[in-house]
Amino acid sequence: MTTVTLVYPYFRPFNDKSIFRFPPLGLGYIAAYLKKHNISVDLVDCTFLTQREALEKVWRSNPQIIGIYSMFSMKNIALQMGRLLRENCELLVVGGPLPTLNPEDFLQDFDVVVIGEGEETMLELVREVEKDADFSGVQGIAFKNKGKLKFTPPREFIQDLENIPFPARELFDNQAYKNHYFKKFGYTITSLITSRGCPFRCDFCSQAIFGNTFRARSPENIVNEIETVLTLGYKRIWFADDCFTLNRKRLIEVCDKIIQRRIKIDWECLSRVDTIDRKMTDKMRQAGCGRMFFGTESGNDSILALMNKRASTKQARKAVQVAKHSGIQVGAFFIVGYPGETDETVLDTLRFASSLPLDYLSFTLPYPIPGTPLYERE
Ligand code: B12
Ligand code: SF4
Image 1 (cartoon, protein in one colour):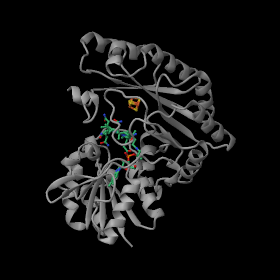
Image 2 (cartoon, protein in one colour):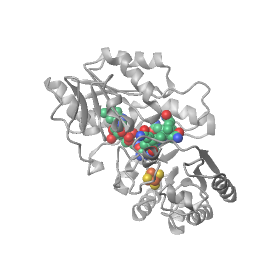
Image 3 (cartoon, rainbow, N blue to C red):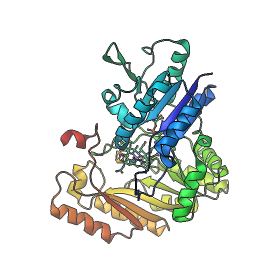
């Protein structure tokens, strides 16, 4: 049987103060899909490991194929892990948001770059290795052939997300994640994603993997996954969807099902300020939503327009109030120092943020991520 080891090369920086730690759901999905097709899979999540421990775990799993995740902030470490593991497998693959955007940067150190969603592509790559064939028939990859970069035709998005099994959560170090949150907050939380893609096109947002269309799982299927997460001992869920509240009907049905099945779970989600109303937030609260986060971004409408946010400060104020009235805590993310800002617009953001009844807020500098309109303008 072919053996595959998937690696999430995130190592906590020394003196790390960040709070959020979530398991790599993308690798969990790929692992579940491969397991469903009788392929033996290990997953090495480096979040709680030293580099030495992670390498030893990979060596012990003795895989034929190694697949490494990378995103914008993890490029150097993914490349380094690739170099260190290159001799330990027959095929070294990289995937995730950054390799999808910049495959050339990875092909010096990896055999294949998977572009976009990885479940079906990884399975086909495994089958090719088993047959000792070449990869030219596998859609959605880049590789080097006689020194030249070759792209195969792009792979279509997976249309029915319910054809993929739930992530292989048994391969995550759930105890370490639970300990981390329990120590910090006195509760345990993990992530779950119910849709892929977002129809908006904010200037700074990277849509490398799931693109600009919205694909969603059914309420029944989502609530079934919530129940499996509860069996692992988690008390809270963070919905990692780009915008969990995008489809009103689906959201209300999910809440109704949680209530009908008497599921006791606290949850949090990301939302857009133009997608909610009081009926929704009341229902969400009733179904256990304790906190929601909005990408409010700026307190100045002309900067919001520059960011192509397609939402206004008036809508933001209303959304925060609506959620608060329903008894939901509210967090807001702001970006300051956007190209085109003046001292006055930054002050608008600070004044706006401090005028809202927020329970949590963050200010970050803009990150020009390759492939985004912001990056192109920089
Ligand atoms: C949860 C999340 C986090 C979590 C932790 C990450 C985690 N462990 O999941 C937290 C909150 C800590 C976080 C932090 C940051 N994040 Co973040 N995060 C996300 C979010 C919302 C969901 C990730 C997820 O679970 N996706 C669902 C799975 C199914 O998708 P996936 O991981 O992409 O996996 C698929 C493919 O990529 C591919 N694939 C993935 N890995 C591999 C490996 C192989 C071998 C193969 C073949 C294929 C493959 O197949 C998978 C299945 O189809 C995404 C947005 C999004 N919609 O994905 C942003 C996102 C990944 N984050 C992003 C960014 C920029 C950051 C930060 C830098 C933000 C900041 N300003 O600090 C930090 C970096 C922190 C770090 N760890 O280095 C960007 C990355 C952009 C890019 N092009 O690289 C994204 C895409 C958001 C965005 N739209 O801009 N993030
Ligand atoms: S920032 Fe949010 S709303 Fe804007 S494109 Fe990205 S996911 Fe969609």
